[in-house]
Length: 79
Image 1 (tube, one colour):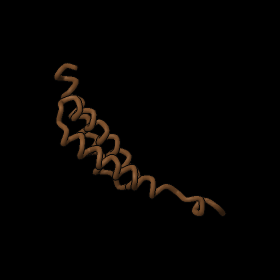
Image 2: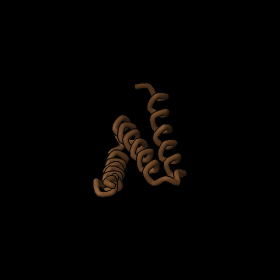
Image 3: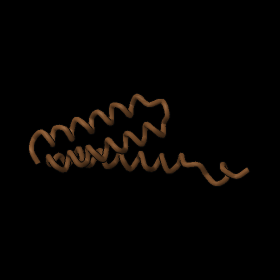
């Protein structure tokens, strides 16, 4: 992979995380942040930055956990 593609991947991840932090809706925030974390994991793997991979893997797991907890329960949808 050439340097420009690697840099673009890093910038895309940064932009995605930054955009996620502007969301008022917590679900949108977590989804966009999760996508940014996955891109950061890819970027960190490419450049061999394992602390970046570890941190973003943890944040991605936290996002998935809270998204799972926020899903509507069957009790909420029954009338």
